[in-house]
Length: 199
Image (cartoon, rainbow, N blue to C red):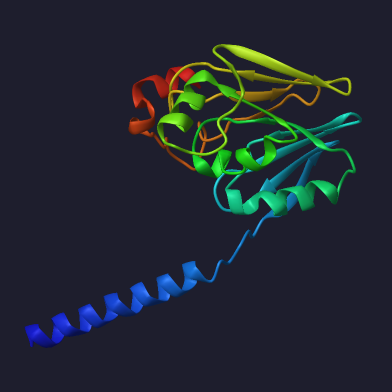
């Protein structure tokens, strides 16, 4: 009886592993959706982090850029709402679902992140380390619009920033606010104790 049960469980594990392998190797690609949040502000929602798309008459400012395989889909979705080029990418932190397309954007856009996020990208041997960093706050001014990035302290990682759109009175929190409970990356310098104070 025990041997039969073990064989059934083993067969089930092999079947699930095979199904998962087939699923992941199919290259399902991005399954993202474009949502309008406000005038000139859109969200690209899908697996991993969400991208904010802020349109100005001089170019587009992105907040985060998902995984590398999302790059073409992000560009296509931006082109569906504006003919302006993507000029800036602000990373909320270093995780690949927020920075995965950095390397592909770097030839044509400036990528900006907190200094700790850049260090974590380099230490993790991730492609696309930002060329511009800051330690407390910075702002991007483009086409008469402003986007501010501010570091309040450790939380999800040691390089999380919140992005503020002053004209719209909206913020993008990255993974500082993700789901119903704190998600802390201790290996990335995160702190549950400091998370509450950061928020």
